[in-house]
Amino acid sequence: MINEITVQQLNPKQFIKEQVAAIAAAVGDGIAINALSGGVDSSTVTLLGHRALGPRLKTVFINNGIMREGEPARVAALFRRLGVKVEVIDAEQEFLAALKGIEDPEEKREAITQTFYRRVFGRIVRRSGARFLLQGTILTDVDETVAGIKRQHNVFAQLGIDPQQAFGYQILEPLLQLRKDGVRRVGRALGLPAEVFARMPFPGPALSARVIGAVTPERIALVRQATAIVERRLKSTGAFQYLAILHQDRVTGMRNNRRAFGHQIEVRCWDSVDAREATPTKIPFATLTKLADEITATVPGVVSVTYNIARKPPSTIEAV
Amino acid sequence: MINEITVQQLNPKQFIKEQVAAIAAAVGDGIAINALSGGVDSSTVTLLGHRALGPRLKTVFINNGIMREGEPARVAALFRRLGVKVEVIDAEQEFLAALKGIEDPEEKREAITQTFYRRVFGRIVRRSGARFLLQGTILTDVDETVAGIKRQHNVFAQLGIDPQQAFGYQILEPLLQLRKDGVRRVGRALGLPAEVFARMPFPGPALSARVIGAVTPERIALVRQATAIVERRLKSTGAFQYLAILHQDRVTGMRNNRRAFGHQIEVRCWDSVDAREATPTKIPFATLTKLADEITATVPGVVSVTYNIARKPPSTIEAV
Image (cartoon, rainbow over all chains, first blue to last red; front, side):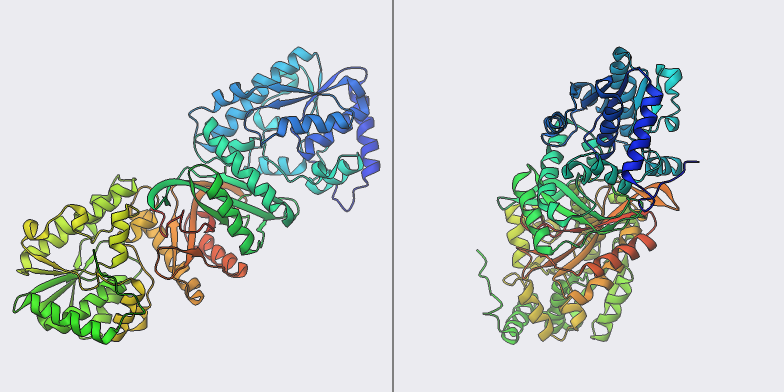
């Protein structure tokens, strides 16, 4: 049983002090490694680890080819400004090859998890000589994995992997007692800029979770473009999370006055505190219409755009 | 070239007088037949034909098994009250068999068209001894068929069928110069109740146009249930047309705190004058949320509901 620290109970400075000390004590004079995704969880862990270990924390950013527009460069530059060196690993081909031909969401997550841990990151860890792995697991990840709602890719025990046995290293999860709102407070207190500590959640399987059915470079490019539009246009809502999903279903549309069978993009925008429950954001219709207009005008082959109106539960934040 | 009569130019009484006379002159002392769907076009044609021919017009309602909840009984009862005898033909099995295994929208329409004209209605016409067929074709059907946007099932020439040659009868299309708004005026002037003349358009392929992918009795039952909810809840919007679509894509959802892969229903509600251009109706969010709540709570397996926010064009009113 994990002892939750609610955001009301949390004292960020105290929490940081304790976790930095715990990491320093655990790693001793060894080397630790962590994978940074750019999300608030892994960014916060990176800064905690950096504060505890300095250059003895090796931080890698794995470009899996299913990231958002410009993300790898943006994240690396941001941490460079914070004084943390991040090594960007290009693994696009390896991930896309692993995802080829897979349509089932569970198999998709599995392929990404396996490629990430067993192949790409596993290889980096083995070569690094590190014996400690820092993970940004939060309490909601554990809850949802245990409940079977979602399989979080960063909960090792749930995957049946004993990292000590499998890879010979030990996992440190300094954020395990927090939920997203607590992590944001800690990230802010550590000096993360608002674009990170206030960044909305983004799924582990990245844009492959935003494509229903087959993941191909072409389909990732379409959803990446729609995602950039949605993120730019809905930023001012201040919502918890907003996203674009490329459907596999094709729908009838019209181009140049003729029937054209085309793609549909679903937009979701959620009001939520901690992702456990969520409600669609009440966005003005004028905003929704302009959003749909831009998506159909600029994303190739898209003839239809919808806005999700169901709550979580019974919906979930992501569709895949 | 068809000479359009706009709703501004239309004099309903004069139009009725002329069309009744034209039908009477064409049919002489023969027998005519028509298929009533319950929509405003075929209902108006039924009353025009009835006024011209009395009992020498034979009107059939073909239950294709893909109708909305209670529709066959409702339409037959309504016309009985108007003094028009309607024969209800049960052809559910024939249509569902023809649709089996078909996912492509064009093949779906084709299967329904062929089953309707070549098999079910064709058989009825041949047995009836009628030599005249009354059709509710309107100008928009012709435009859209010619433009290739949609293939209207009731435009014979477009299907390469010469009815005179194929079946030995002549087609009469008294509404050919009108658009939907004009037909409504004429229907009203003929004494149709508001529930018919103000009835929103409903596609020829009925609920099979509201199911993306495979048409099965189970999937028709789901979309029929969602359709009843959408029609009841959105009636007060006074919108041009509102509908529910069952997607083939499955999305992640939650039931009883566990992950459940489920169905998605898409709701469309259109503001339009004549269906050539259309804009999503600005529905209050509270209404959308209650709509989604009822659909997810009552339609089995549905975990997600979306609302269409793209205009026509590039979207179309229906998805299939």
